[in-house]
Length: 249
Image (cartoon, rainbow, N blue to C red; front, side):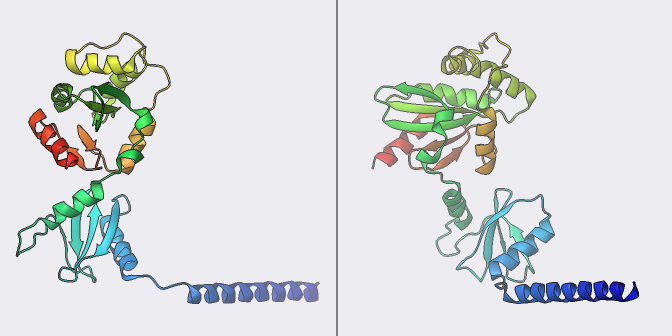
C-alpha cells in the first residue's frame, strides 16, 4: 500500500511540474502589452471597471494620449502622472481639437443605423434624410418635431427612445402598439393625443435602446443627417436648412 501511494504521489508531482512548465512557457511567449494597452489598464484601475473607456490613442501633442471616458474626451501622459478631462485647444489656430475628435467619434454612417426599426415619414421627393432619437416626454423633442414638420422633400426616421423614465416607456409602447404607429407618434408629439390600448404588443424598444447605448446616445433629441454627422438638441428650421444645403455642396 505504501509503495502504491508513493507512486501515485510521484505521478501527481510530475503532472504538476509539467503543467507549471507549460504555463511558464506560455506566459513567456505571450506578446508584450503595447503602451496603449498598459495605459488603458492603468486608467481602468483608476476609474473603476464600471466606467467605460474607449478610443485610446497617442496624439501629436506633447506626447499626450487621448481617450474617451463615459462620452467625454480626456488626456493623460504615458505614466498616468496627470489625467485631465475637457477641451484641448490648438494654441496657434485656437481650434478645439477635442470637439473635432468627438465629432469624428460620434459620426455614424447613415446606412448602418437600424432604419428598419424606425417610424418612417416621407414628404415631397424624400431626397433629404434625417434620423431622430426621441423620447415621448421630451419637451425639446416636441419642439423639434414642429420644426422638422415644416421641411419638405425629406425622409424622417423617428426612433422612439424612452430614456426619461417608466412613463416614457409606457407611452412608447402604447404608440407602437397602435394600428398606425407613425400617425400615433405624430398625434402625440404634435397634439398630445395618446392611443387607447394596453401597450402589450411586441416592440423594437429593446433593440433601439441597445443601439443607443452602444453608440453613446445619451440625450434626446439626438439626430443624424445623411453624412453621418450627429447633432444633439432641438434646432430651428433655418439651421436645419443650412445643414442640408451644406450637404448638397
